[in-house]
Amino acid sequence: MSSGDSMAKEKGLFRAFLGAGERTVAAAFAKLAESDEISKTADPRLRLFHARVDLPSDDGSGFWRFLSLGDDIFAVLTDCSFEGVRHEHVVAEGLVEFHFLLEGPVALNLPQADDATAPANISLMACQQAFGMAYDVVCQPGAYKMASLYVRPALLEDSFALDAARGAVRQLLHPADGTMAMIEQKIDLEFLRVLRDLFGLGFEGRRDLPLAMARIVELLALSADAIDRGSRAEEDSIVFTARELAMFKRAQEILATDFSETLTIPNLARKLGTNATKLKGGFRLLYGTTIFAYRNRYRMDRAMELLVAGALPIAEVSHAVGFRHQASFTSAFRAHFGLTPKQARQRVSAGT
Image (cartoon, rainbow, N blue to C red):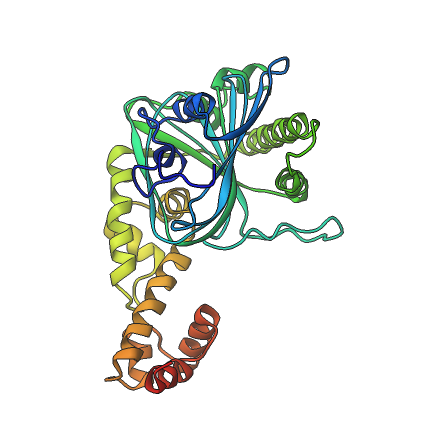
């Protein structure tokens, strides 16, 4: 469908956008299967399903692709540029989530076939919360391209040989009551090859649907191997309580308003009563970006407000948003807006 007006009830991500009453992945896919407004394909023999949902033009541009293998594997490919903030409330439904996250909001520049370098900002995050737990995901305006897989824990144990006897894997597959477990792993060129192939499929030929599912199964096999290697290295999963999940809202508020030089990640973690590892990992999961990138967006927006107001010299604007040296501020401002603070002020003065 070209417009989601009939299905969108709020500016949310795919669960809220589709208006799935239970706000679960399974409910969203059931809604897609029932809808007559959406272009979709299915292969009953292989239990495969695919649908594409376009983002309405007044919400931005791009689309989501939805793929499933029966009720064991669900995949959502996001290729959207959002005009405004998107919010989603995620409840537990007994699925392990795998997210291939970017330094959003940015476009995903997957390497070409002859590119031997792996972007350092792409990682795998796997998580699951116990029933009764919920968390909120917030995406700032901008371009997002990511793959999210939702898988039955029993399938991961039986078909992908994840060993629940290991502590980190056990926490992921069977989170304790009142907790959410998360594992983060850097991904290598094998992951990137599969992601590039998956996003490159046009879903125009009859073989594209089984090819897409083959890539998704390969991603899961690579993910299981990466998690297994991590658990052998005695790396624990990060475990969040409900209180810790709630604290990220406070972290968001502080990062959007406190631009002092002394606001470092360790200092912020101490202020919130957590540690830097949990703070960084949870923030990437819930907000799809790093703490630095999130804070930098608000610093630059505040700098632009002060420059437009015209009352402060550029050096004082620099200090007001936490930069000790004006040259560093100028470089950061130009990287964010594509022009220097002086040029921004001149354009405002000229009325352009």
